[in-house]
Image 1 (tube, rainbow, N blue to C red):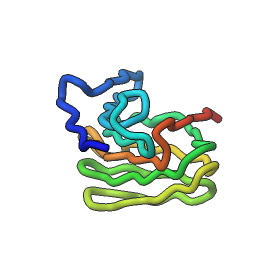
Image 2: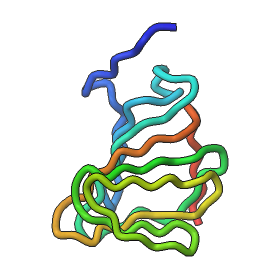
Image 3: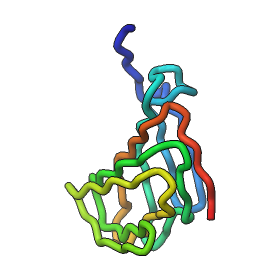
Image 4: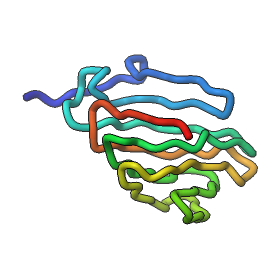
Length: 118
């Protein structure tokens, strides 16, 4: 197996009402058989919908901004440098509670990340 380099122009970008998702590594992109890695951007005052991943764990690492992350019954404030690990099946979402765009890296333990909305 070879190493893969994903160039900026090769990323898959999903624009949403609350921000955007940029996918850099996934089975669909053809550069991993075991992981999905991306970057999430949430606009100030916005939140991504509550959801869960039935087939993979998620790790979220904040690069910029301030979010409140809800995972199950837990709510935690997070800022740059903070990381949360979310097991498969746990309902969660992030709300940008700051004045700037929130940016975080998200990684999943499957190349075919599945998402179920609540």
